[in-house]
Amino acid sequence: MKVFVTGVKGQLGYDVMRELEKRSYKDAVGVDIEEMDITDGESVDKIITDANPDVVIHCAAWTAVDLAEDEDKRDKVHLVNSVGTENIAKVCKKLDCKMIYISTDYVFNGQGTRPWEPDDERNPLSVYGQTKYEGELAVERWLEKYFIVRIAWVFGQNGKNFVKTMLNLGKTHDRITVVDDQIGSPTYTPDLARLLVDMAESDKYGIYHATNEGFCSWYEFACEIFRQASEFDQAYKNVSVLPVTSDKYPSKAKRPSNSRMNKDKLNENGFERLPDWQDALRRYIELI
Image (cartoon, rainbow, N blue to C red):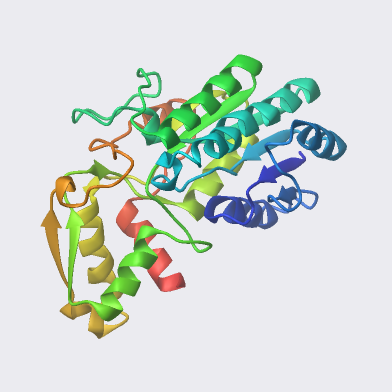
């Protein structure tokens, strides 16, 4: 099986390449914007056709959620997340190869407390969510052999994330305020990468939710980060985390308060679910 991965400089793409290496996929091809601009349809067609993969794992995306709301950025976000995804889907259709598209909980309206089901109505609140939703529609429109995998609260070795932000703040602040009215599940990229390669090796197509097990608020996530980090560095014991409501942190993009997602479909199709988020966090903190 020949695998083609986009966005290999990002947190997830980086770990997908490492997982493929672990499984001895010698001819996996990884690209980032320098090698292939996904918004350029001709370039996408030529580069993927030349590689002639059996599966494309599409990790590249515009992920700066607040910046996406800026008037002068909206066209670019649409180009990357919507048009770029459609460009890739069209080539996959032509080559009759599988596509795995990484999506997000932001395609939902974030209301209620019930975990979102894969086939729930999509009603995004932000430009980022809308463009990722458009990407999903493009994949559904062009392909039959596809996986749409929705994730949330991503952290990994390669790039910026909430865990690194908290640890850096903890070095300079003894009090940190974190919102406690947004509930979801963190996603550790090495765990997700394993699942994505399992999917690539299968034909159990469809829409899936894939985050680490268990729910928490951002506040609870932050508390656990400092609890675990203090086992390695005593200084983090002195950091106190204070819960606040989202209205104390107004942001350009509206955040979903309910990011819970139901992952039962993974079991139903024989995929191994991701470990508990606390376990994933422990492995990550030990690593960094």
